[in-house]
Length: 322
Ligand code: ATP
Ligand code: FE2
Figure 1 (cartoon, helix red, strand yellow):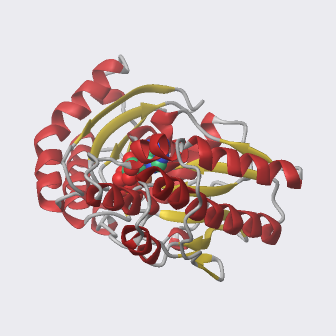
Figure 2 (cartoon, rainbow, N blue to C red):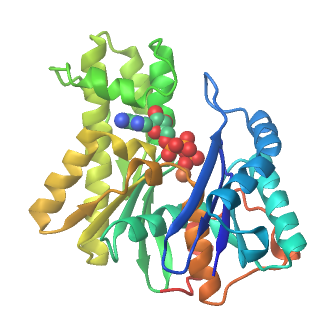
């Protein structure tokens, strides 16, 4: 069986084809690049003008014909309305024109499932830290559940905003990581863990108001926010009695965050995993693969049910494949 998956929740439009065995035959993405943040309408226009080429290329690169496609999967949410609508429209037309079933995939769950495919992790807690999202997710009692999440903005967006205020180009995350390596002094910043949830806006404001060298601010931002994430992840591990941590999202490429997670998991006798960078960030293979798992376990939707879900909750999904 060949599943074609479309990702288009935010700045990336992509198409990928996977097989039953989890082989990723092709993966083609086009990313809308902006200097600052993201403009949803413009990103959607970008996706609309590239989606057909992207689909065609993914079929060519997989070395199959469009008639060979058995299922079309797409990112149904959460994400930016205009981007989701454009992607869903493309998925619906493709499914109708090929007369094949349609599967709507939750983007956050797809980050976890691609990590299970690409690493040795079997039953992990996912620490998903991207531009727009920050969540700790685990499978428990038949559903993927969110054990902790940001109450305001995603950590990546916070780092990018801080960087913009300091004159750094977008995305600032990798530059902040470089600067932080020269940091020596820990600047006192609020440590915002509320129960299992975290908050980042106040930390950013506090950092912007400090009169300290940039490298120390970058260092302190990382130490504070990464410690918060590590603490929440550790408590989730204990709570659901799991012994694997899987990382996902663009921010987890940060080596300092990885080393904190490594130390924490080692101390608990647990393991940690991170997929290749191309599978950490938004990618269409994660949608195709999760679509495959869903379809294979009996889940598909009609066109009438394929409305987008901007606030698609992780625990809304009935997990039929585990
Ligand atoms: P979402 O998946 O929520 O739609 P997104 O697509 O914007 O968000 P990703 O592509 O997963 O997010 O990741 C991009 C983010 O990762 C940016 O905010 C960027 O600053 C951050 N980032 C990338 N590399 C690093 C790094 N080494 N350290 C910290 N942050 C990083
Ligand atoms: Fe994502």
